[in-house]
Image (cartoon, rainbow, N blue to C red; front, top):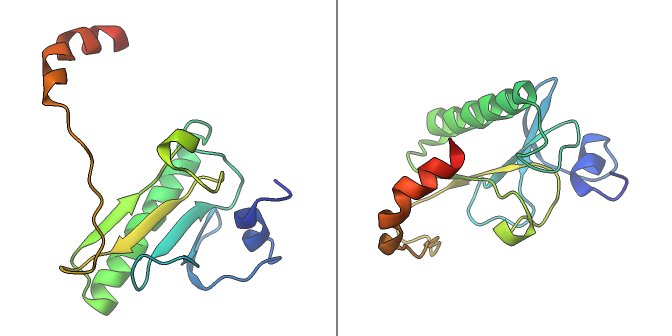
Amino acid sequence: MNNCIFCKIIKGQANSWKVYETEDTYAFLDIHPASKYHTLVIPKKHYTNIFDIPEKELNAVISTVRKVSKLYEEKLGFQNIQIISNSGAEAQQEVFHLHFHIIPRKRGDGQNIRHYTHSEWVQDFDEMIEKIR
């Protein structure tokens, strides 16, 4: 945790531009923004990703994501946002402190997150469901 930039932000050891804060969460502008008001929401305690955060703390983070999103809707008129969280290096997580991105979007903003789809996997759905039962 000593080298975690988000832990340093919480401790006041690194600069941030606070948007919103609760006892358990902190929301601030992303220093590498994909759009204006691109915001990160983090738990104040260090959790690496979705797999190790307790449900209570996750609920607090998600609540803050919604509050910040509603703030942007009410104050700035944003009607379109993406909410993104990556867990694990192969899922493109770069900072290993759980965080959610709130990225305001508008037509023609140059952002294009696309996933390649695999409709051939539909035939495996029954087997896939059996593996998780």
